[in-house]
Amino acid sequence: MENQKKKNLNSDEKLSGIERELVLQYLMDGNVPVTLTPVNEEKASDDEQIIHPLASQIFPVALKPEHIKVQKNGKIHLENPPQSVMGFAGKTVRVEFYFNRVGLYFSSLVDKDKKGLFILVPETLNRIKDVEEKTDYDFSAVLFFECNNKKDINTPCVPWEHEDLFSRPVWKSIPLENQKTAKEYLEKFVESAKEKKNAGNGIQLIPVCNYLTFQEEQKVQAIENRVQPLNILYVDHERIVVGSQNKNDNYEVGHEYGLKLCFSIKNSPILSRDIFVTCAVNNVYESEDKSRHCIDFVYTTLQEEDLRYLYEKATKRLFV
Image (cartoon, rainbow, N blue to C red; front, top):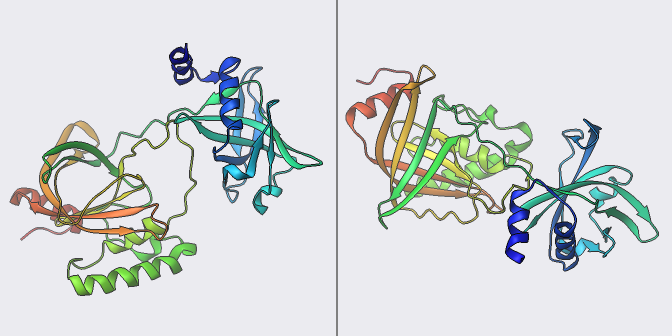
């Protein structure tokens, strides 16, 4: 019976009845962080709601387990919440959390009683839907094995949407509000590069600093801790730099990998070019809170015709 309940929970988009009771008991047992996001709700039909976030300046607020107390009747009291949550009173919020690694959410009004702010759990809960990944990239890559351990890994790498690949990185690509922190990272990385002499001309450090300081909403995913594709931040004829927010990634300096670089020609799925190289971890850069890190790979084997192709694509100059 328990397996059947879990199967239903993982397959249905809406949860009610006994499934809702299981989730409610889970919340009552504690140690469940939740995320609140103020929203506007519009009725699309009798059964469907369209949810829009409020102004883009308003970010989701993560509440630690000690800030919520759940009662059997589905009333969630917010105990000593952060000051930013106090402004949610009278607003509808989207409440997101994980139950057995499955992302769930519901929408409810933040109300007030003599104990303070509270939220009522509705009769129906919803599963967070998987976000479909964009797949029509002109360029992508795959880390397909680790040479040191002879281990197949097949980790996809896709362009980071906030960098323009195969163009010379420029400092103004970093949002103005992040540039002070980015400059501090850059100074630290340049100082280290002077000692180790391993950063080449160092131009790749601009997208590294951009990635490490970029402010982004931390969204609850459909499945907790699912491994995400690596973000390609920079690529040329000598190296490729990728960014990661995966908690369990472990790339050690000196470890070598097999890498496939995939180019589509003239936006055609038929006309394509794949370049196979081996590359070694040259450096790993981490954000202060260790939530993001960047891996700088340098090529260890590269065919001359592929070197020519990458050089001309990255520099817009003929290879001589």
